[in-house]
Image 1 (tube, rainbow, N blue to C red):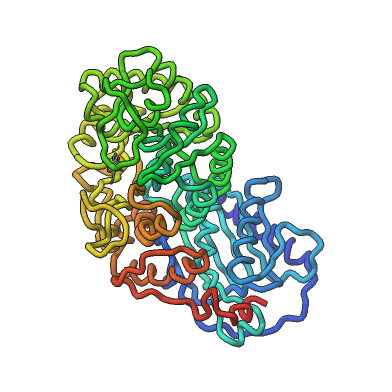
Image 2 (cartoon, rainbow, N blue to C red):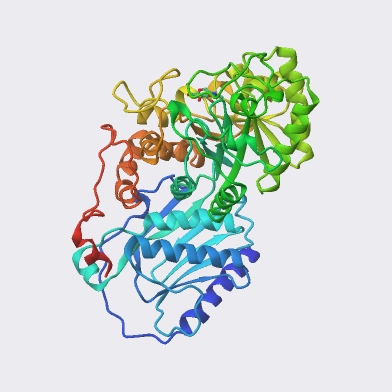
Length: 542
Ligand code: TNX
């Protein structure tokens, strides 16, 4: 208790010094309409919200300050300032000294409060003259900033717009994630997506507090990452994609750019090299790897399960060692995904032998192995992770080995499933997944897998039927927004009726980001008063 008081006093003292240090200007007294923080359209829904029905007036007399000496917190302050500028065209300074017109502050505080017990936990206090965001970690502060971005109103009433002041609903938010792992997967192998497309996807994932992006970097139809020791993987294996289009690949520099962009948004990139099946592109590039006894050619179809590496050749393991080594060296995150799914032409004993050896290679390069659920048939270490996509019996086997499970059941969580029979893109081998079905399942207990064995949830976007960013967005949005809530918010805080209203209110943000979401009829989509292309929009901002 004493410790907590001391921390609060320190924050108050810092704020007082900041505000007193700034000569007050003549104040304009503006009456704000009543607010209710608990009714804000926040996604994912925070753990606890207590409304105090006042407002913080965000205007040009506001400044952002961050804990001194914490460079990562300062970067988050700069990130917030940029987003405020984009959203409402208001420029506010970060950690600037000598500004003498400041009346209100947003303080991003590196706190040592013991109440913040998860790395991504944060507390947001919105008062009339200050907003205080507390977190032990920069990651937590970054998640908190997303909440604040969502609370800042898009449009205010005419008087407020005239004075260029935006009322931020007051109160307190105490928040922490339901699962530590909240992910999407993007298949860049069946169709290649450019760095700028991946960055756009990352931007929106970050807004909804998703913290992991899994990249499916190789498959039968294409190899998408430069490996310096094996250059033909990309010159040959990267030249095709589904449907006869021209393919593509990331140089290691491109990949590093994606990793760095994601890291600035506290998103971990997980690279996947799918093997021993799904390896046609690799084996065409280097036939010595091939284990299915056939002469191969580049493949642009959609079948799965016909390719395999030769699991008994040492060259194959030297190859894998080089690949895992090069990719791990440019991947700061703790995971390496080895695929392992649908290896229908690999004999069971060869498959087990292969996965056992590959696990050791991954560990040698300092990473924790993830694989699709079929890997549980091997003799795995408890630190390896199994990704549930089809059968709960595989997840149960994983649990018996002490492994954690990532929940991606295809009939609920696959972003490439069609919404309904009229869907413009997608497949439906697992199910039709309309927006409500995507939201109203319970990953905490799906398939009778206990929550303590679940690392988190992931929504994979396979790309057989999509070849550009608009099509990607059609399948991913709005469903991924619902998955973000399943990952972050507790079961008690999730409710379809409440969620669908909040989702409808995401339209102005999605429009501003130019996201071509699927406008499901289940949702009443709110359009911004002045949408992006309305020439009057500048009246709000200038
Ligand atoms: C199954 S799920 C696959 C992918 C396909 C996907 C299409 C899994 C581990 N493998 O190879 O792209 O279905 O929905």
